[in-house]
Image 1: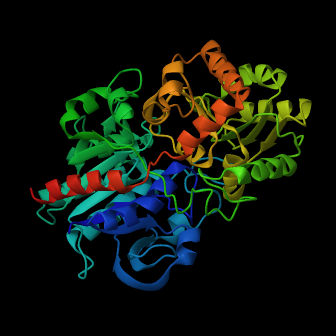
Image 2 (image 1 turned 90 degrees about the horizontal axis):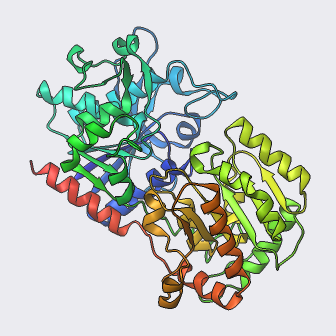
Image 3 (image 1 turned 90 degrees about the vertical axis):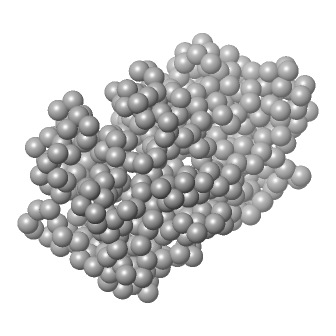
Length: 486
């Protein structure tokens, strides 16, 4: 049974800004079921620190700079059956805002210190500072944990650990870039600042640290694993990824159906399932009322739950919004992000108050109600490493309308004539990232809506899809076991 330390900056249900938290929250239990012995390491953000119980001090963590203090605590968090390590550093983590930025959305100037220390703490655990448990593998998630791989490589060179590392790319576009003159704050040996190290075009890259120093690299869908090896989606790191292709694995994220199932969801107006979808109509009406839309069962309701960024393809939605409105559709948007996109969706809601509703921020309960009440979930991303939104849509019978890219391509089957006939269609897929291609997919959605017998069949197929964590966890455990036997 391989001992594995999962390192993440977010953890559902305690702290979430996106899909990373959902993965970090669901994967440990799946790994335990697959035969590993997982534990977690997370920063001591207030929501996590306040929830920690049965805590005990493991060891202090020496800071690479002079001021402040940090320590590793071990304890329990609600919803997790395994012990959790919390990096307690109040001067770094006890702050307002989200994990990465202040209440005004400005990134903290010392983020390099905050997440370098997370990597250093992972290395200390790999060196055995907790005499009761020592990981054989450290699994670091996204750029925030990338320096764990670099610090453990440095520890191995000093013969302080033989732990191996896995680094998972959740989104290559967010790389953790910092000025080169911050290198002295990272606690790494000087040779690590090199092209074959953390240096990236004259800057520091936490993402590159993970990619270069990890013993195995994974990303969150098979298609994305191929795409990031190309200049178009490699974000300047495609050469390194092609060089390391022999240790790069595309493993599709899963869904925690204990959280994301309409059959057992307490946040929605009525429960339902693939065998009896009658409750979905009540959920739709409740969502329309909640959002101030016309309570019209015959109007197809489109939902968006997303960060409002260009990457998510939302300019396409805005460009074709009149098409959706003129065809009799309704739209609910939940999210925040780019100020221009926020303003344009707000203006649309003002122009069409009974057909367009906009809500801001991260509201987990409303997100569930949008999936339950929507007929279609829009995910027209320019690129999408995996995407969980479309998987939640499938579970709740909100047919995904997606761009054929990354994990969207791996999980949604278009309503082509052939796939309708074969009973495999689950949504609407467009190939080219253009407004015209998006509009054609939108028209296909309205055409299917007008044939409710076909719609019901596709919805049933969608809801019967299973993207649980079992298969992904088994692949991760295989990687861990292969590394631990080196």
